[in-house]
Length: 240
Image 1: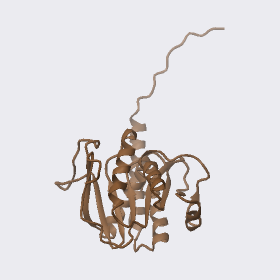
Image 2 (image 1 turned 180 degrees about the vertical axis):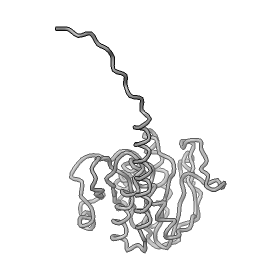
Image 3 (image 1 turned 135 degrees about the vertical axis):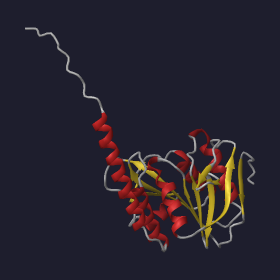
Image 4 (image 1 turned 90 degrees about the vertical axis):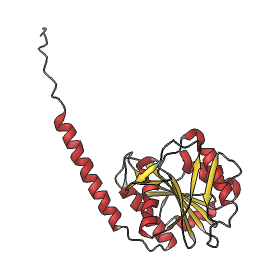
């Protein structure tokens, strides 16, 4: 449990030496949560813990009849993944980020990676990169577009701020997305992680899921358009 009892971490101790910690919470395009859930499933991570809080929505997630905690902690060798199914309200981002980082402070964490989305409404699916120190940017400059200025909102921004304050190396990878579920953007972010951390991960199935989702959304849009009532023409008086 953290020092702040409002954020409760129930987990086995991290077993890896100098682990890297990846975090993904629902946000724009659900980029972070889709990416990390796919990562832990494909690479067969082991769930070692959960995070709960009075601040979280009063919901229990369910899959195939089995209850699952909305924020979970997974581990495989020297990689830890914190995956969330629920969005974090802006008013509690500080408390949640601070609680997670308080728990991580007990372990020799090498670096923290926050994965999120950034809405541009452009089709390229670029991945934008930021780091807590200027010297760290060289490592990611060949794989991401370095953001020159701006702000990162939500839990991703709060986590990176906590890394900066606590002098823990932190990276932010922001997948270019639209504001709908975007597995293609998640795949782009995973491609960056695969290159930087030499992950044994096949991303092709996620791209196939993206095509299926895009096709379904396109069909839905067509159905909505075809069912829209045609406006009646009004017989307006003519002047002149």
